[in-house]
Length: 489
Ligand code: SF4
Image (cartoon, rainbow, N blue to C red; front, side):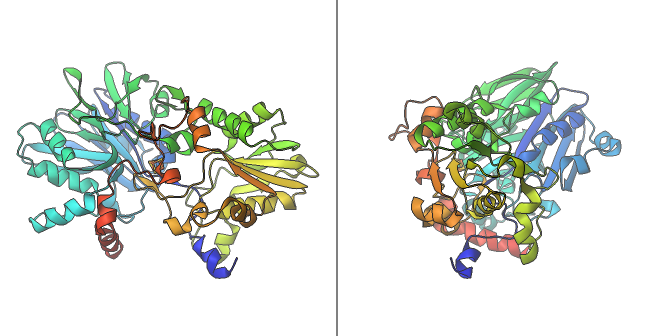
């Protein structure tokens, strides 16, 4: 491996995982809407830590607070929560990749339109946003931010429909992409998922208040009851008359992101009626069936590899040991972009538990390999702690393609599995053996017989390159232009 090759596989902020981009929360009909929204966003913090925002409505006026950093840092004061008056609120956690990390790019985005105010927050990625933005600018629209969410606002403003919900639906008909969206008007809260339902959105209830959230863990934290997942292509409208549902996007073609189950979602959440934790254990079991190895201990790469490692240990009958300890006080994007700190990265976050490793043959279980930089350092760390053999088992198939649906992924040439075959990957990370769960094995663990090649049950494009939604901006080059614009702004 040359130094140039290493550069290809490293990045200043890299902790070598894919990152979910954003979480959303909305509540309608509760006197403490803003406080509950802040708690909900806190539970969804794993979906984005760079900024957070809440917009509320008190029956007459909208109120907004946005801040860089984590929810607990910016929404814990009484003063802030009291300023967000009203019984309805929508909120957002941001993980920024494009659009720049500046306050004007923090959601929910709010605009005063001809028929009243509108606040919008979404999780995901609109794959034709840059193309639409170019058209809108040519037609005279003036953009305040580089967020794709602002495109939605302009499309709603330009819609010829009369009612606000019809205008939002009309706007979303022009958009392709993977999104879960919450919007607040002066009279209604609206939630919707794209027709493929790639990103999650759940519906809950607390007393008489309805709640929309990216994951069920945001319902648990406020003691709300989980009602159901919002269906792919479904539009939920909540107002003083209660909740109504429609399906204006036909036909829905469900392709939920399989990586939500593998890594993104919190293990205490329930997605598509399945406990994320149990799914991850089942993936670990299947991994052990497909890729057994004669070792003394099964060690998770914490925290994301833990449920799969428990399943692997149960299936294989090998003792499960916490051989790597994670420092929970290091944020995901803590590491500063200097060479020196970059090399310290993994030790800031993980340390070998020598007592559980020394003199043992171990198998490490992790959820995925992206660039391979973290795996390389972890294997080396475990060897230095005295392991006699270090095997690596991965609870997802090789990540060979980038995600364009709201997950921060490196470009293909930086993905280890896109560059190397299994043997070369194993050599790169320095393990004695390396295996991944098969694609069909992953589907089996999800409760399917196998992957339906004609119409896959999930989005699995980062493993297969089978993208269910057109990559309009990427194919036209519009996305690159917008990225350049964001970098300049
Ligand atoms: Fe999820 Fe991968 Fe599809 Fe992106 S490409 S939505 S990470 S399965």
